[in-house]
Length: 91
Image (cartoon, rainbow, N blue to C red):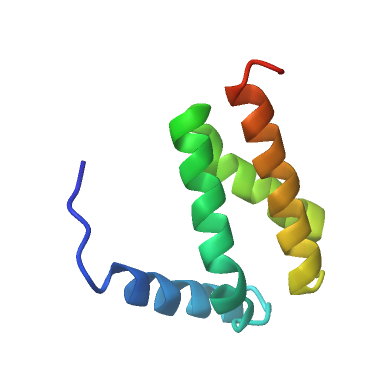
């Protein structure tokens, strides 16, 4: 596994901000949802299976489309609940 550098999150935000602009999305949304998405993908990677993490983030994006931050946070919370259920053997 690669070692994280202190500026990884800064570089990630810069890159994602540019990608947002390229995709004609509001780049400010990155600052607002990044901690939630990173937490969600961490839980999926550790409690379900690593390859599912980016794909779940993609599904959150599809479901939220151009929704506001609160809708996106709600979608992330729904996925987090699914992770808990899967981890606890309820899936």
